[in-house]
Length: 318
Image 1 (cartoon, rainbow, N blue to C red):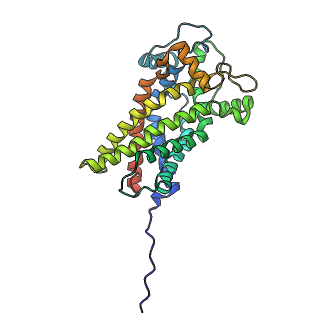
Image 2 (cartoon, rainbow, N blue to C red):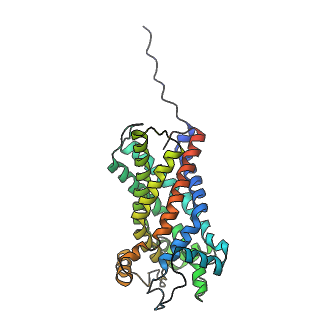
Image 3 (cartoon, rainbow, N blue to C red):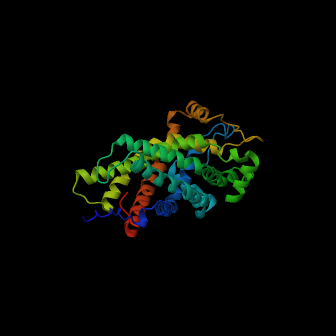
């Protein structure tokens, strides 16, 4: 009797491996970050202006609106200041983007058991997106804190205030010295909340929109499909994430006492309530235009780079 052949497990491309997906995610995110970073800086400045408590009663703010803010930065601080803080931003994506993509894929494929080419319920995709975003942002929160403080240095000096930090590593050392390890996670709660919402908008929308396009149209898995899906993802992510982003930025930028406690807000809820009380509900959408204008090209650049690099390496589609 001829013995039955031993089943051979399907061969997997190295490009589908955990480490390769992580690296590709970081590279694609770094490309997108450098291209769109000036809009992130503009958004941060917009979210801080009008902060009555922080301005100590100062009624006039130096900038009004997105384009005036960007032009003001170039005119008063120099063109290269539009990329102030890009180094910790890239450091952030070394942690954040890699973790969020590989975690989403593992949750989607192994926990919720998405079948290749099959349908996948939106609620499962949403749970995967929220969870992966929250986990990734928790680990990356210290780099976000450093980025926000560096982004605000130019404005502080224009207002005649003493420099707070002089660079990425100095910012890390100063935060660590003043607040200890816990101080590195100042603002992490609204930061994690924002990341959960953004990834619910970005990862979930991109994945769902792409599958919808592929299953309901004759379009192949091509650049056009990626552009359409990423455009939807950028809009939804900006709409869901901006309020939490405003709260996160203000908490991270506020001064602290000797024990590392915020002097302006007790918590993210306190910041939310004070912002609405002092400036109105629409203050939670300060910076929405640059957030959206940034997220749209960021999402587009990221997903096109990510999909193209994976395709070149021979990996399966996202």
